[in-house]
Length: 294
Ligand SMILES: Cc1cc2nc3c(=O)[nH]c(=O)nc-3n(C[C@H](O)[C@H](O)[C@H](O)COP(=O)(O)OP(=O)(O)OC[C@H]3O[C@@H](n4cnc5c(N)ncnc54)[C@H](O)[C@@H]3O)c2cc1C
Image (cartoon, rainbow, N blue to C red; front, side, top):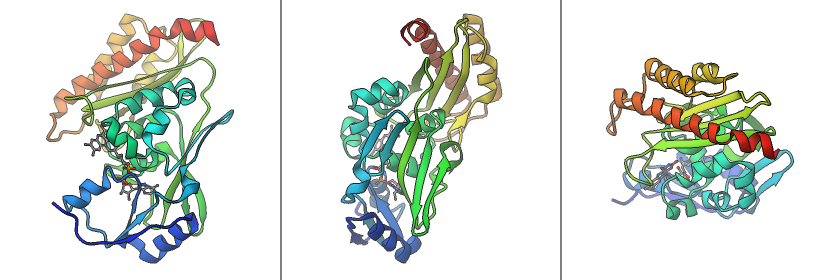
């Protein structure tokens, strides 16, 4: 199928893009990598009267890694971040999640911010950004505002963004020393959206106990779901086999995940328990390195 007709705008400055968005209101859609938007246009799930292509706004194409953390502009492709060895070292969990997003060809075009703005509840990057405590920088004609990732995702395919706003950047704060992390997911085929994904972070203390653990799942709810009850079970423990069994059981007992054409709620609940347990096992694997090397 082909999309419905639309007017196409290609601003080269952010202010020009914002002015156009203000004028066109909710009759306009931003085009970033096009990897989610173009299929939706072609299936006529969306038929905006205007498309605003932000790919020539050079200001949005930058990323930086400093002592404060990582800043990723709206024009930065997923693959650019995946291929940076410095970012892989600083944020291994982000790198691992990216390698699970779709296929290389899609990551070559798709942007990090586009995935966040799209807010697909099964996508990897929203849950990773919640786990990392990231902040969204949102700009409109009246200025910038910052929104925590945890508050940005409102529902499946719905974020805090208003029609006249652009998600210009995502900020990921530097991780505390001795942070370990893992991203785990279960998919039917490599490159598919996951049935369930989990981003996990934590710090091993000098007594060999995990602290400040964050467990955030994708695919189980309309927004990235932080499993605080599971975090409470594991924090302050050595993540022994018994703790892992307990947390897996608790996840399976407590969740009531989304049911859709891909799988039942019951199966997804079981898979979530397995994914969380596997992720925690990977934190255990990193205990020695975290305490020895930093
Ligand atoms: C076959 C296939 C498989 C895929 N598998 C996965 C997968 O496994 N996991 C996964 O996470 N993703 C997957 N994707 C989606 C892919 O990651 C997209 O790249 C991503 O969701 C959207 O990024 P984009 O830059 O292409 O955004 P676009 O498609 O250009 O835009 C998506 C939406 O976000 C809005 N938008 C984009 N940028 C901004 C911005 N800066 N400010 C405000 N609004 C904005 C657009 O208006 C649009 O509504 C898949 C895509 C395909 C085609």
